[in-house]
Length: 80
Image (tube, rainbow, N blue to C red):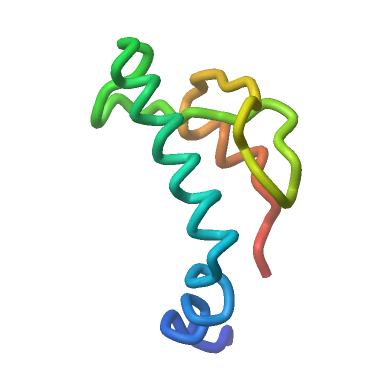
């Protein structure tokens, strides 16, 4: 049986860090830009994918594409 996730600890140890906040803001800005361009809309099941994005650092000037949510989730690493 898997142990329960400690979401508060997870937020404090990863999501609350300034560099992660900047990356999240950049992801949100990319989504907003795609919505403005009409490439995605709320509830359409699409996600904005950063092509060849670095694992760390800035997401600025990284090409994006719109792909189905299911395809994007298949590409993500499995979590144990």
